[in-house]
Image 1 (tube, helix red, strand yellow):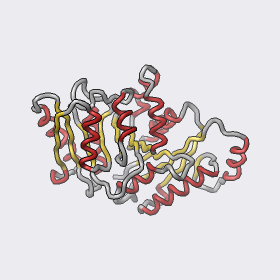
Image 2 (tube, rainbow, N blue to C red):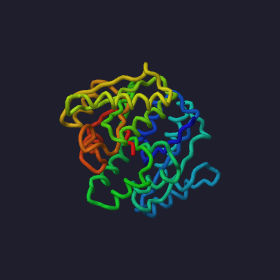
Image 3 (cartoon, helix red, strand yellow):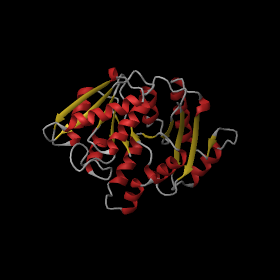
Image 4 (cartoon, rainbow, N blue to C red):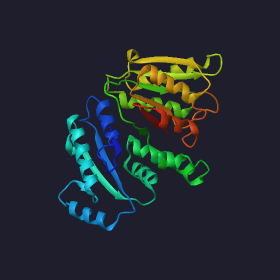
Length: 293
């Protein structure tokens, strides 16, 4: 079954980290669909409007107008995707004027398009930091809790060639098990990747077994064989430090986790409006962060 991804791109050809990640992560993309999504800034000056007019082409398969830099970025992104055996017919390019701020505009497009994941490069992740730092903003909190943030967010720094496999963090929360389900769905046909189920213990360790069993059952529903699944539990105090340590040891391509965890255990401080996710976004290097609602 083909997946649908919303990949945000900027006007810089040097910041296509989201595009590069999916091309390095997937062995085959020909069955999937990618929407390259660019938001035009509000503060376009007269010179930028002239450039937009110069690049307006009604015959192209592009929705909206593009600046020179954005056109180059889109062409580069299509070239990268083409090299990964992705048919150009399966790439949609959409540009929109900024209306409510970049983060809200991205989440709005996601809710309308029923995407399996929103893929954000490093620049987009900085925009996410700007929004989620305002934990007291009731409007932002409501948007995260409701349908505005209904798709998993993949935050992709510059990837490192050769990285493989996914670390999925569990703490007994339903958000964590949805992260497991998302990983199973994405990796169901990507046999080159294994999955490590990860739990940080803060008690005597007895709670890990039940979490591992439920997570494995979810993965097996996606035809993930036991030969591709491993377990790892450690004792730790800091959730972010434990996750970063395991990423360093395992050299994972991606780490997946729920947006909100239990009051205790792994992810207890991992609300997207809190501090741990911001620490992970700023400190994770060469590994993508998959945050699942």
